[in-house]
Amino acid sequence: MIQFLAMLKLIQSVYDSIRRHGEETYPHECCGVLLGRMNGDGRVVTSLARCGNTRTDSPQNRYHIDPRELVRIQREGRDREEDILGFYHSHPDHPASWSQTDLADAHWFGCSYVITSVEKGKAVTTSSFLLDGSGEEDKKFFDEKIDLF
Image 1 (tube, one colour):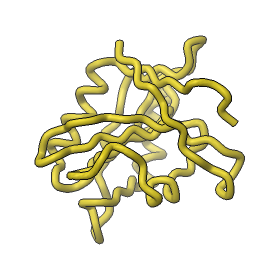
Image 2: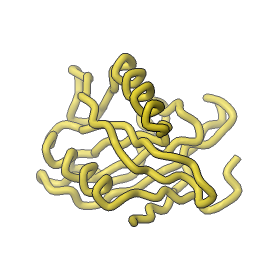
Image 3: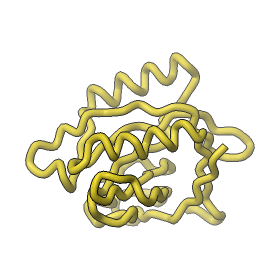
């Protein structure tokens, strides 16, 4: 269980790319993977992989990443000595906070889930949440500070 203030370090260009992706896919949710390394300061995101939102039933308020795409991204990241540190998606015309659906669909414990609120096509707020717990029955999100560098 998390006993400290969680922090996610993002390169400014990655942060900007996340927000731009949300604007480009508006009014649908965008989604992608955060890659980087663990170091003494915690988790440092150095790149991202944009993914296609494969949801066809409600892409304006749900997202899904094809598992085959995720495996490819994980493989390519390992080749660069990067690990999957989290995921990102947008909330078109909704706050940058997690929903019950976001929690139900989150399964990568110890990973960050970054959400950008996109209002009328413009990225407004970006927040991060760390998934913690020992299993599906007790998983929860903790607020996570984003540190840009």
